[in-house]
Amino acid sequence: MKKVLICKEKDEKETRVALIPDDVKKLVPLGFEIKIVSGAGKKSGFSDDAYKNAGATIVTNEEAAYEDSDIIVRIMKPESLNGIKKDTLHLSYMDPFNNKELLHDFAEKGIQAVSLEMIPRTTLAQKMDVQSSQTSLAGYVAVLNAAAHLPKALPMMVTPAGTINPARIFIIGVGVAGLQAIATAKRLGARVDAFDTRPVVEEQVKSLGANFVKIDLGQMGQTEQGYAKELTPEQIAMQKEAQAKVCEKANIVITTAKVFGRKAPLLIEKNVIERMMSGSIIVDMACSTGGNVEGSKLFENVVTPNGVTIMSGDLLERQVPYDASKMFSGNITAFLTHFYNKEEKELKVNIEDEIMKGCLLTKDGAIIHPRFKEN
Image 1 (spheres, helix red, strand yellow):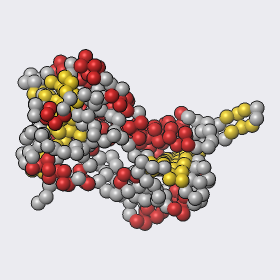
Image 2: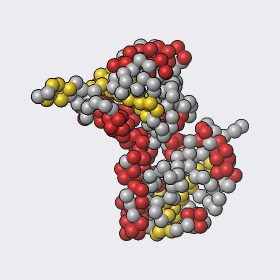
Image 3: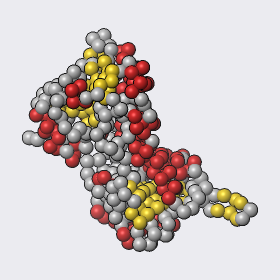
Image 4: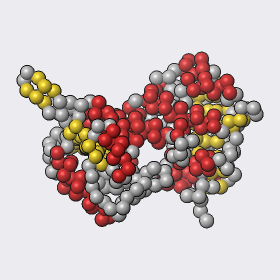
């Protein structure tokens, strides 16, 4: 397997491309044959000529190109599998917990489907971790978006007309997105508080110059994949009440709490929002999985009666598509080269490899991943 097709995203909101010209230059000398659908990189700032100069072939009809492709790479899950041949290796986000029917379609057609979200969060697979690379940028954009809407400056300023106090930003959830949000807010001069259910991240928060809000929730920890463990109803109630007191004083609140494969926990309810200052901003980075904030809407901003703006914070990496594509492409390139045999000039789907075992969902006409296959 060495013939790679880079798809053009069908969703008009999608701005990224799965592979950039610089990485095409790295893959072609290894023996990969790369095709790209015309215009696929345009929104990210990469022209067809740049791909052509890197060694890729430009095609105008994506479906027709499926027939001569061993590997298909794209950002989001496909709208249709028509034309994709049996045994093709397909790489994209899949949202497998919410797309069981799509998994069955992949299996029925004999396509080998890799879910990029399922790549194990191990040291070896770190270079392939699209979740980390993309959410890091999203955390950065979340702060910029909130700052642009806030009717107040972020840093402290001492002027002849008086002193401006720094804005207060509260970040709930200190994963990759949260850490980048903290770093960005501190660079912009804000006063930052942060909370996470995992006490182990306190040191990281403090190292970035932020204050770690301590809330005693009892026994806590994280999963093997590095995600926060799901809270009990009693723990969520305790967390909400303690957070409310910090939210009341904050100019910006950013929530990043997602539970992989499950509905996001509701952390900020209407009664808390009603206690917040007029003009304050909330960015809910979990809108697409149910939302951390009551009243948030995917891809929409909502202004409450008391003047609080609730901003949608999902897929914010699309606002910086040049760098988001560069990082995503680096992840894909690391994946392809890891499984590529240079001597045979073939990519091997090795299901004994821990990385492949963790993210390959379908093979040989069946759903093979233990979390999704049906007994």
